[in-house]
Length: 397
Image (cartoon, rainbow, N blue to C red; front, side, top):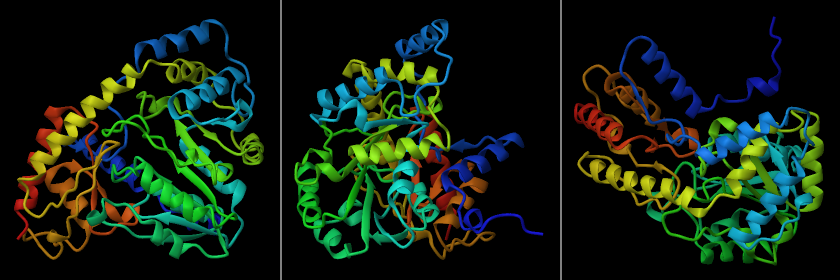
C-alpha cells in the first residue's frame, strides 16, 4: 500500500545534495573523490563569531526565542541593511529563519495560491522550482544562456508577465552561474514591474558579499516597487556559517507577519545560539568578508585559466558567488567506448565514476547543456580536480 502523498511524490530530490551524496558513497568505498558539488565555503567560521556563540551558551541563551528572532538580532539586521545597502527596514519587517531556504519557503507558501504564476529566470537555484510546486503555483521560466551572461532582459520579463503573475524570484549574485545584475539592469526591471502592481519580487541576495565587482545592488533600492520587494539574505555564504542555519527576510510588514505566522506552525524560532552568533556576524568589519572574497576571486581566475585548456568546455566570466557554469554540449553523443554521453546528467555521472570529481548537471537548474562547478575548495584541490576532469573528457571521442 502507498502511504505517501502526491505532494512528496511530485517533489524532486535536490540534485546538489544528491551529487554530494553519491560522492560521499564512493568515498566510503575507498575511492578518492573530489566533490565540487555543494555550495559551501571551505573556510571556517571567523573566531569572533564563534566566541559570541560560546558567550551565548555561558549566558544561558538556551530557551525558546521569539518566532521571528530576537529583537537584538533583528535590530542588527535592520542596521546592516541601512549601513551596507541604504535600505530602510524596521526590525518588525525582518523575520529570521533556519536558513535562507526556509525564508524563501515561508514567502512562497505565504503568498502563492494554487494556479498563481511565478516567474523564475533560468538558470535558477534548484529549490525555487520545488518550493513553488509545494505551493501549487505555476512556474513560468524565462530563459537565458551563456551568451547573455545568464541574465534576462527587461523585455523578456515584460513578455512573461500576465494577469496571473503573482511573484518573480531570482538570485543576484546568482546560484548557479555567479552572474550579478547591475544597477541599470535592476532599474529596468523595476520600471517594468512598476506597471504591474500585483507582482511581488523575491530578491535572493545570499551571495551579496561574494561580489568581485564591488558594490552590491539590490532591486529594493527603487522606490516605485520597494513596497513589493522581499529581500532574502543570511549568514551562510558571506561569513562561512552554513551549518549555523540562519537566514532572514526583510519584507513589507504584512508579508513579514505572514511568514512569522507560517514559521510558527513549522519550526518556530531559529537556534538561539546561531542567532547570537549572527549578531556578531552582521556587525562584522567589512574586512572579514572581503578577505574570503579575495580568495574566491583568485580561485575563480585559476579555474577559468585551467578550463581554457579543456577542449569543449565553454565558459564566461562570473562576477560573484563561487561557481563556474560552463556549457558542455560539445560532449553530447561522444563516448569513451563504455559510456555514451547523451546529456549533462550523463556527463556528471561519467566525471564522477571515471574522473572521480563530483559536479552538478545543469538540468537541476533548468539549464540543460551546462554543469555547475563549485570552486569553494583549495587551489591544490581545484588543480587536481580540473586535471582529472580534463583526462576524463579528453577520453571522449
